[in-house]
Image 1 (cartoon, rainbow, N blue to C red):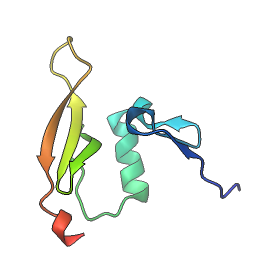
Image 2: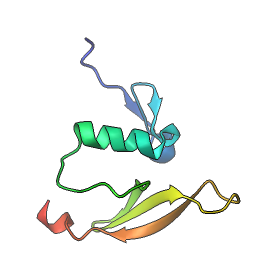
Image 3: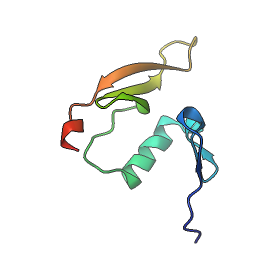
Length: 84
């Protein structure tokens, strides 16, 4: 097994071992979180953290209710961040 991890890019173009994070579905993200996550948060259904705005604000992405946009982003205040 190759123990090297290849990481490049950022945001939607963040690529880890030739897997582009922006191409993963919410279900794929949930599987990764359940397998490798810290387990101190409960996943929000169909919500993926897109990026971090500041020390306590997460920019989250979820599927759009319309056919106009693929997804919508909104801010989520992380109240548990001060305990991490």
